Length: 159
Ligand code: SME
Image (cartoon, rainbow, N blue to C red; front, side, top):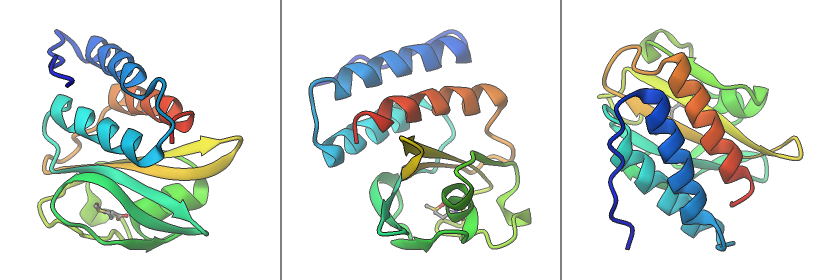
C-alpha cells in the first residue's frame, strides 16, 4: 500500500516529489491500466483544487475515457473536439484559464472553470492525454504545466 502523502513546501518541490513517487509506482509494472489508475490516484491526492483528473486514450484515432478520479465523464471525444481533442490533434499542451471561453469546450462537469491537458507521446505518436480540471479560474500555472509534462514523460514509458 502506498501511504506517504506528499506535502511539499513549494510547488517545484511538490512536482519533484510527485515525479519521484510516480516513477516508484510504475517501475517494474507493464500493465497500462494499472499504471494509469495509480498515477491518477496519486495526482488526485497530491494536487489541490482539482474536480476531475484522468486519461483519455488514443483508441484507433479517437479519444476514449481511461482511468480517472472525479465525476463520471464523456466517454468518447473526437480529435479536434474540445480541449482534449485539441491537445490530441496538435500534440501540444492546452492550458486554458477559462474553459467557457474555449470554442467547443466539452463540459463534462459544470464545476470546471480551468483545464490543463497534456499529450502523452511515445516515438512522436499520441498514446493518450492527461486531463486535469479545476473549479478555480486560471488554476494552472507555468510550474503546473512543466510539472505535469514531466509526469507525462514518465507515463509515456509506462502505459
Ligand atoms: N473538458 C474536456 C472534456 C473532458 S472532461 O473535462 C472530463 C474537453 O473539453 O475536452
